[in-house]
Length: 215
Image 1: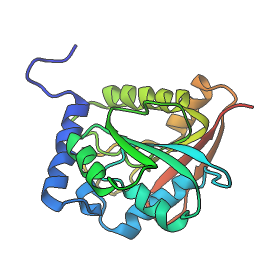
Image 2: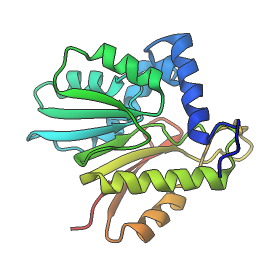
Image 3: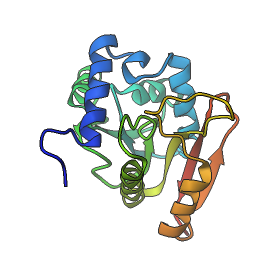
Image 4: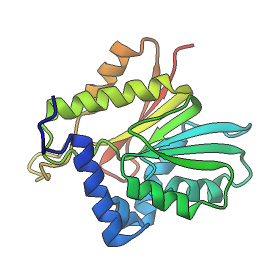
């Protein structure tokens, strides 16, 4: 039961990212990444899930100001991709709509997760910043989001996590840094037969999960 006057975890995250956008504008810093190459390297890993050899629909969960659409325009310019981005920050959704208002093949909505069934769903960085949310409560939110992605993705979904801190490394307490096994076991238990590929070693202290449904 939410405590009156106390923001829920998603309300706190929404306020956090809305403030970043206000301070830095629709830039990588505005979604808490240090640079465009850093942001796009993460997106490139997620996109390894996708086959764009034919028209596809794509959910972009935690879309921010629409950076994925920029990357798709550059790397997959001939592909036919119907993109629907969602975000918990109204300011981010408004920025994405302004940025891509002239494109008919993408739209953006205020929502916690995916809101339609698509071929693929991607989510970059949405689990990393838990702020002061207790880990069990945050992990319940992560589990709910993974179930949402599973239900709304015909051909699969992809997510990323920051990896555990190295021994002796200081890590800000507001970051969520699970071992891959934590969510590999969860997916095995809740999505029987799903094929999961773990991507690591791409120059960032994190990993990406590519999840394809059974069959």
